[in-house]
Amino acid sequence: MPCATPARPAPSATDVFTERNTVFLLATLCCLLWGSAYPAIKGGFALFGIEAGDVASKLVFAGWRFVLAGALLLALAAWQRKDVMGPLRRQPGMLTVLGATQTTAQYIFFYVGLAYTTGVKGSILNATGVFFSVLLAHFIYHNDRLSPAKVLGCLVGFAGVMVVNFHAAGGLDFEFTLLGEGFIVIAAFVLSAASIYGKRVSQRMDAMVMTGWQLGIGGALLLLLGYGSGGGLSGFTPASTALLLYMALLSSAAFALWSLLLKHNRVSLITAFTFLIPVFGALLSALFLDENILEWKNALALLLVCLGIRLVTREAAAPTKPAGTGGR
Image (cartoon, rainbow, N blue to C red; front, side, top):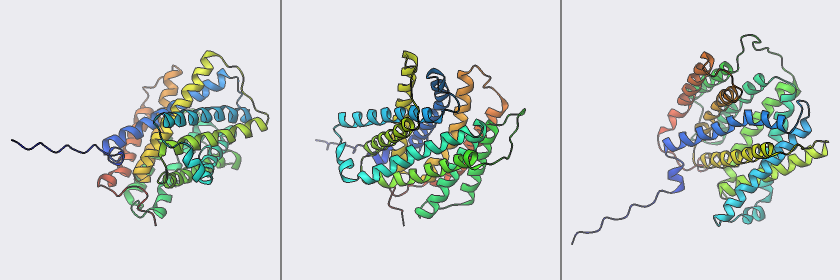
């Protein structure tokens, strides 16, 4: 009687989230979702009647977005019978720090900065977060060192972000103020540092639960600051409510996937894909605003960004140790 063929073990979460094609697909999906937030945020401001200079109401809008996103993730985790309350009891400080930095502080700096600079410059300067992530990873993880290819890839990807935001009529000025351009760069640094901290925290708890709590805590802090500064949110209609729910869904999905990818992979491998966010944002904004998306600059920008990602990620082709084992 022939021997039965041994059953092949099911792939683990580490295997799934380190398989190269899967990583690239999920990272691109996250960036596509975040890119869709550009036109969605603009539409949300219009539907809720939030004026350009009303930063407090923008914080309230963002706060509800992230509170809802966190609640959705925690509800899903509870439905999957994950330990939702355990991490909050055991590591409340870590979750609070993560939520206060990755969500609250980052969005405060970003929204205030946008109020004092142009959207073009904000999009370009926000892309400096890739440089910060790659540089911080160099000093924190011994298996994620800087190299000429990574530096070149960052520069090429950044050039792509500049191309997609270039306007021949207005060009790009080099004025720099602390409240405007400075706050955008600070927001990019805060997000980079908080993401690396989140990678550490995710080694101690489920990534979905961690993301749910950090979004919920960060969103609650945004609500306190927004309402405390005189902000508010009115004009709820079926259209505005649906858009807010969509933004909560995209945030919960993108942040949860991103946390899993960072947990199981090198920081530089994942963060290089964030160059795609402003490119997707520009393309989707043009699409939903009935503008011409088939411009030479869009094609060139996408080409440069993809080349930059290729340069940064090609060194990670060899199998690596699970994330978190390479720290000093």
